[in-house]
Length: 386
Image 1 (spheres, one colour):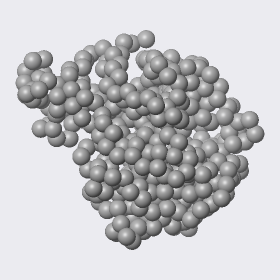
Image 2 (tube, one colour; image 1 turned 30 degrees about the vertical axis):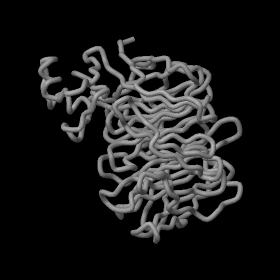
Image 3 (spheres, one colour; image 1 turned 180 degrees about the horizontal axis):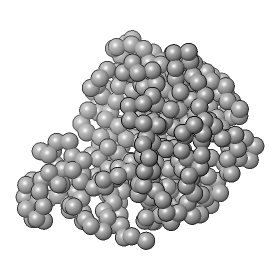
Image 4 (spheres, rainbow, N blue to C red; image 1 turned 90 degrees about the vertical axis):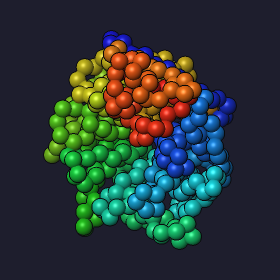
């Protein structure tokens, strides 16, 4: 197995429940780490020592899912979407605090176990796709309003499913194509999976698989293979990771080795310094497994022990891996392949001096770490040196 250097740059325990994570530009000061546990959602911002808690709020009910995005307008800060027992709630950062912005009408017994965001109709504003595990339906919500006082989340559509909803993910079959909604639903002891595409006449059903070989525990999508577009991937209750292609039919094109007792966490994104997407799976045994695109070999490209049972994963736009544990912890990891190393920024250093030290260029470091502002580095920051 190829070598990888993994460094945990932030760790916090004591959130007292299963932790879900995501990344978003919520405060307007770079990418923030979002963690939800129990009824509380916490926002962490980058600092010289890693990450610090900048704000926290009680949502008033058990948080079952979260996603970051849904800006009010182009260029505006992102917001936090929470799936609760009976509704979907929107929070935003205002003057350093998380505040309630809008919520849907209550749906008793829904239990919104997963939410995803995508601009389904091409109007420039994302819609909310919510999967209620207590119902055999998929809910679609649209955000209306241009100011905080005007904001409201209204029901756009409901799609009936063959069984209780489980997970939802978004993928594109080709660049700039209409987003495709992939939804997993429970079917006795296993799951089914179907795809939906928004059209002028409503949602049209695409390729589907009525019976998968296991229960879906996690669902994601990304550019994982050599063909055009993205592919959905799911982690099963049998410990296997599978990738599907949706081209006329929904076909399983990849099955991993057995990775553990199950795969409750799965994400896909470009890790810092990597030129392609990495598919990362997390297990209850506390392991992370990475598959670099194009994913072809059943054995993972690398494996790292996280130390706690993994509950949720998310890759930031800067290539960092956020991890929520099943025992109340949140972590941030930075990975470095065999052809690079990690440099910790010291006081007074610039990208120019760091590049000179290692015989590389400023642009190479910027590209390897997906830095948006080369002037904004800080002491204690971890940089991957190609």
